[in-house]
Length: 242
Image 1 (cartoon, one colour):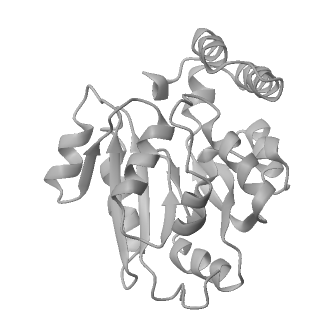
Image 2 (tube, helix red, strand yellow; image 1 turned 180 degrees about the horizontal axis):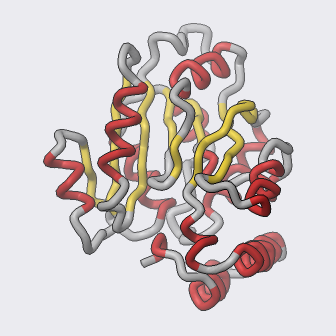
């Protein structure tokens, strides 16, 4: 990290990729904004072609909402990063709620020289099986990572890694973190981001975990984006892919 970089005074750019999130986005951006009081911050929502009122809700509340040139979280997050002015980038999914202390947590990590990292997560329900999933996120293994845990990274390192791959429609976070970890250490902040359990509620715990394992193994074995995305969409009801 450059000696001139001071995390306490650096702008944090919060980038939120969205697709049809009209029911939750207003609460999230208000929460993130409230937690950021006193810190140099910008909030950038990047819409992936929503067919509901997501973009209008964000803009009428005075927040920035960009239209992505393509659908998919990777290109949406890259679009937000390109627009941003911050020296710290913080990628947050629309259904993830980081701890209220996220601003200071991230800045403390950067002060220690940790240039990238995430939180663990906990689900927004008391399902005992989902607690097992959440417990695994405290371990430093690629399979235990995911965009739901949010991701912070210095802007400098993000661009040295060429950002997310725009051609990725699925597993973009795993691909990016795998490249990142070959270059730098990756920290896991010992606090929880609260994640929506809606995907498990709309499908089933067993089904989602089996499909996640299948897709992860396909990724590890080098399957194409088209093959992985087709398999996932055929097996799981999930709005993030449209």
